[in-house]
Length: 313
Ligand SMILES: Nc1ncnc2c1ncn2[C@@H]1O[C@H](COP(=O)(O)OP(=O)(O)OP(=O)(O)O)[C@@H](O)[C@H]1O
Image 1 (tube, rainbow, N blue to C red):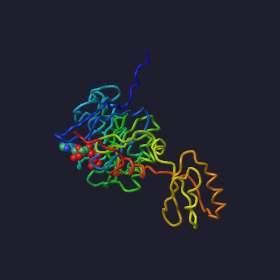
Image 2 (image 1 turned 60 degrees about the vertical axis):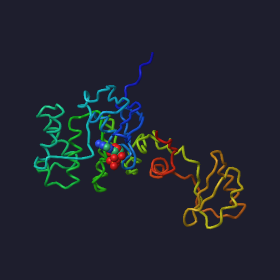
Image 3 (image 1 turned 45 degrees about the horizontal axis):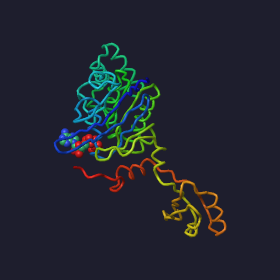
């Protein structure tokens, strides 16, 4: 008999209810070892609530949350690094002392904690600020200290709630690089965001949440495969006669001579080009449309009619 795999994080039919309000509904997913998993949704979709349940800060109303196969995540807390949505550091504490303090809270011996804190500050360009009080640092620097504090005890799993919020583009890039480095060192990372560009660049897989319900879980390619096949054609001429090519179902004007062709999956792309030549339709460019995660998010998780929603009892 094969044993069920142990996932770093696994949720089974988890629901969280606040009074009559259902914040998270029947949510199941698992995060695989060593992956970067994006947790995406609009404001109020239920991201923070879910991450807090993973951290055992709040309890589910129903269902099961397991961290490293343990259904009492509190017991494996020291193997997890958590960046909460509401950040808070002691303003009067120095940068190095802050990181070492958080490591010590997770059981790291004092000397080791201080050495690691110094190393992390050096690695992430804050060596010169080691003795600066938090209150004297820029917002970006303080947030970096907060992130470094979550990894100072060398946890295997990282749970970051909106880690990019409040960072300027340069520091967002620094954080993206940090997250990639952590994955390359074998860590498992789940982070929430409503900024699709970060997720698109970083995530191996992601989950989209809409009003507490999962609307998608998988890779970007899997999400793209849900979309109808479309081609983008650029021409100074009228392309509507191409509608007579078998498989071309619709042609919609986009912008400045660009048209979107909705086609059946098996449509012969060469036949479209040959027909254009016959009809003297000049083609400036022609190719498959690549949906960005941003487009897909709007279709799956944000558009009012994106998914059929059963009425709630
Ligand atoms: N303690 C609480 N009591 C009552 N309702 C709550 C509580 N915490 C969250 N909610 C509600 O649950 C829903 C999900 O909230 P949650 O904070 O998890 O969303 P989110 O996806 O993290 O959004 P944001 O990006 O705005 O933080 C929201 O409608 C919110 O108002």
